[in-house]
Image 1 (cartoon, rainbow, N blue to C red):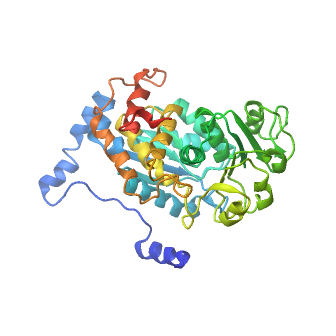
Image 2 (cartoon, rainbow, N blue to C red):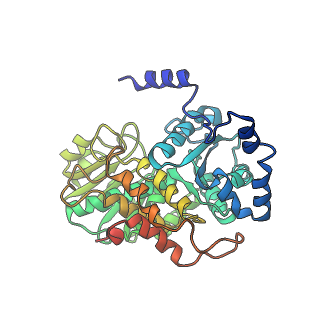
Image 3 (cartoon, helix red, strand yellow):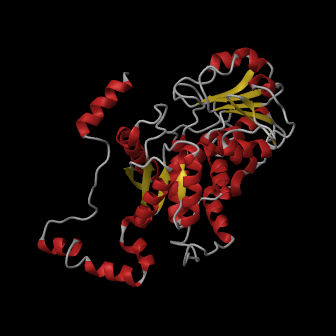
Length: 417
C-alpha cells in the first residue's frame, strides 16, 4: 500500500483528522439557554467561588494540549508549526482512540524556549495536562523542566519519556528472555539527544549501572567538554569504566545496544564484538541503525526496531495515552520517575511468561491485552486523591505515587522480578 498517497487523500477528504463534537444537544430554546447564556453563567459563578470546580463543570479533567513549535517533526526536522499540524492532529487521534483522552493540537510560532514556555503557561488553565511534541533539543529540556516546576498540571515530553518508558519495558522483557539482570548488563546508547538522554535516565531509575553514551564525536566521559550541557552531565553520571573512543570501543563486550541515531551506524562485524546473547534496539526511522537480518548474522539474540513490519516494534502509543489517562484520573500534579517506571513494568508484564520470546518482548499497538491495562484499574480509584495543591509550592504527599503505581500494577504489585 502506498501510505503517502493514502494519507494525502485522507487528509484532503476530511480536512484533517480531528474536529469538535458537542456532548450535548442544542435542539430547543431551553437547550440553548442551558448550554449558553443565561444558564452558563451559573457554572461560571461556581468556578469563580471555587477554582477547583473547573474540573467538575468543564472538560479540563480529560483534556490534553498537544503542543509543538514544529522544530523537530519526525525525521523532517524544523518544518514549522503549520507543516507539523498533521502530526499533532494524529497525536490527538491516538490519545482518544487508545486512551479515551480528549486532546487538542496546538502548533505555535515560537522558536525559543522562553516563548514556548510563555505560550504553554498562558493556555494551561484550559487543559488538564500538556503533551510537548516535536520540539528540538536542547530547548526541549529547559521547556519541560520549567513547565513542570511552574505549572500545577502534568507536563510530559513524549519524544523523551514516552520513548524511554517503552524502551525500558522492552528491555525488561529482553533481559528476561536472555536471563540477565538490569544491574549487571553493559549498555551502549548511540545518539544521546532528547530521547537518548531520557532513555538513559529511565534505565538508571530501573537499576542499570553500566551505560555508555556515544555521540557523533565518540563516547561521553568525565571531562569530555561537550558543547551541549546535557552531554557533559551524561559524561559525569555514566560510563563508570571511563571508556574512551568511538562506538567500536564502547561496544566491545556490551550486552545491549540502543540506537536513537541514524541508519547504518551498527554493522554485523560490530555486533560480533558484543557479549553472548546480545540485545539490539535499532530505532532510527524509517531505516534503523542495522537491519534485523544483519544483526542476527552478528550473533544478536533479541532485536527490536521502531518499525511495524518487523517483530518487537518500540511504539510510543503503548505509553502516552494510558499514562495521561492515569495522571488525569488521579489528578496528579506531575508525572514522576516512579510513575514512569511503574508504567514500564506494567507494559512489560502484558507479555506473559508463556508468550515471551525473542520475537515477542513488547505488546503490539493492537494487542487486545494492553488497552485493558489503561482502561480498567482507574475504576477502582477514588474520584480524586485526598490531597489538593493549594498553590504551586504545595508538597505532594507520599502516598500519591503508591496510588498511581497500584493502578499501573493491576494484578501483581509492579510485577518486578
